[in-house]
Length: 120
Image (tube, rainbow, N blue to C red; front, side, top):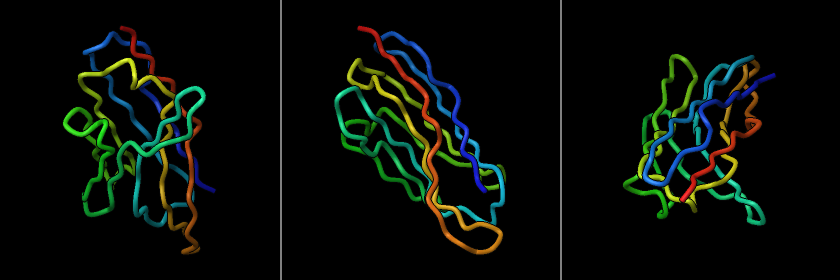
């Protein structure tokens, strides 16, 4: 089994910054893509940013230039640095990972989510 544990959410004023962290643990052989998604009240879950094992990144248009995704392959962690936060960034943020386990089976995993609230 594989677990993803997020941390770093909280309450911040508009224009402020937060850093989210997600650590994967368990029966991991390797991790291909890792990413962050978010879900605001009454809305569908949406992609925020992804990063593959080679470091290639993708971002939602709404966060380009403000958020930075990075990962530490040795520690199986992914980070999301969020700058210039806006009230519309308020959501529950979820970590996601495509994991090959020690039996070489591939599965997709989600973290439990961490709340980010940006006040105006």
